[in-house]
Image (cartoon, rainbow, N blue to C red; front, side, top):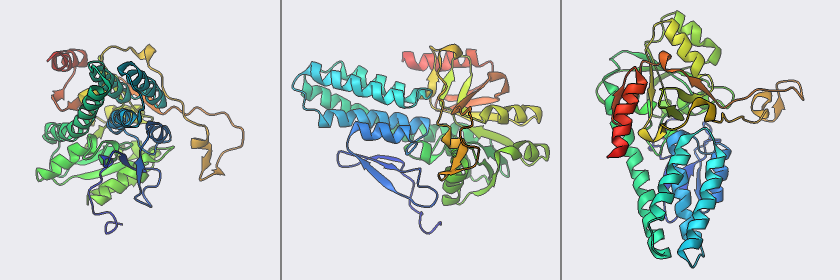
Length: 353
């Protein structure tokens, strides 16, 4: 496999007035790039998990709005702004729990509101969307530098879902920290959970880490307690789809139970996420947890593995409370408990600047 995929994984790119993305539903068997020239294609790709990961879908949303300006036939400033608002609403509806889409849409709409005419709006949106794409790479590398000091040579690190190059434009959040640690000369081993039901761990994280020559082992989700109890894990690191001002972390379903296990076995549990993933205004009661299709857990490749017609509970995300989290790694530095204070002082201060 390595000989087929030696090139750097560039999950989201802007090329010739189009968004180029890796089709993650084809991994690990095929590395396929899709070219999207319409914002509705991006919305469908996000909804169907062709592209996923909080930073990646945020960047895709920004670039989708850039496509709106390119394809628009609007003659007036008001007409173009209306098109952008409608497209933004569509994009936000695709993954309601992930805050990065909302962040990206809000940022593009805000910059477009200052445009005095159609030409200026198009120029402003293009500049902002491409800046967001470039900033994502720099942000991930800063995060990596922040987190590298937390990991030691010889550590065995568990990760859940995929928070690497495939979840960002490139480099990654949680896996970006592990990349930075290795760049600092540390030899790390990784344990990846399979991450049922869509198998982001086995399909994406295992693929990505093998691509980059990490020593990685794959386990079933049900083996987490076993490997921790047998002292096979030194630290845990995951990404996040939304972090509240209280330090509550929304991430892939299964994260909460891993955090509980880590707490019981006194294993440090870290979260890596950019500032764009923080939601300082919402409370838990206001957040919608995305409910995925029953077929994700009743079928594999269109073959039933459960009785037809069975009722299911299939949330995409769960909530890890702050008392189970050792630290939150950001591009601004390491946030430590009590998180309400550290988030308030560091994140809020950065947003006022």
